[in-house]
Amino acid sequence: MSMDYIYDYMLHLLTEYAKLLRYKPTVPEKAVEICTESIACPAQGLHRDCMMDSMERHVASFEPCTLPPQFTPEEAKGIADREADVLRKVENMEG
Image (cartoon, rainbow, N blue to C red; front, side):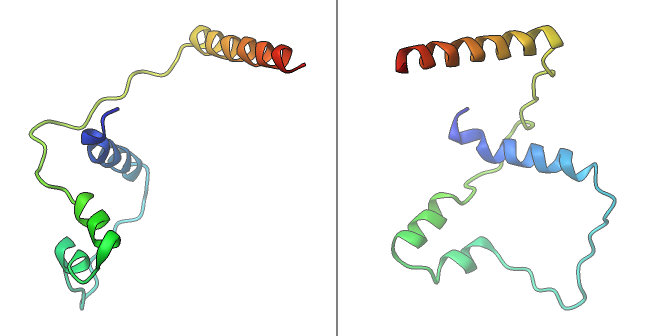
């Protein structure tokens, strides 16, 4: 997965997870909205560089990615069998 899509993927995961929650967030009375720049600007050196590099630069013009369907039991068994085979080969190479 390209790093260009990591925030889209994170948003997708959080959105799907939020659908499972019963908690309804509310904004406190004296809440103050802050922007990313107000957090990054006082930072200095590598800390600031990292914050600025990880900021969202534009809003994507497409929907978040869709996840593939779950593995079928046969596919999951095939993956587990391949993994066990690789581990067995590694153990044979070590011993």
